[in-house]
Length: 101
Image (cartoon, rainbow, N blue to C red; front, top):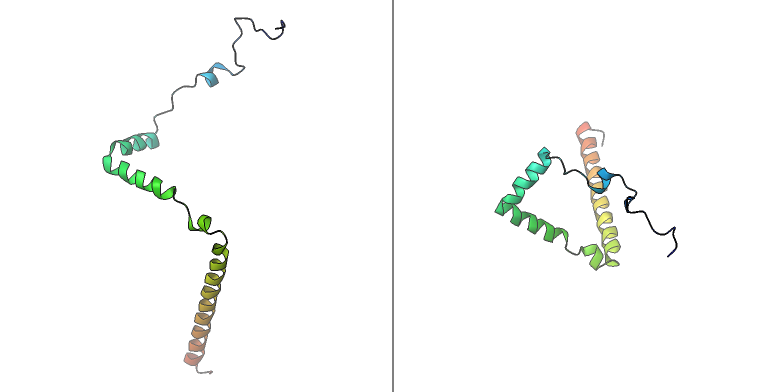
């Protein structure tokens, strides 16, 4: 090894400051206290595990990537036609109430 590759023993191995190499413990905020209280409750632990397992599921759009946009298109088409028909129906009712139709 060359002399440039070796460090003197007094020089630290990292260029980071001391507070970054050995950070202080996190502050005990209200959120951390609330979180630690929730971790001690058995029913809340079970609910959290159920939530995590539900979030880790495979989504329908990931299982059927081709069918999802087709189904979404027809669903949006049906909803928009129903909304347009509802607005038209309300418009006809308003015209009948005013006596102009």
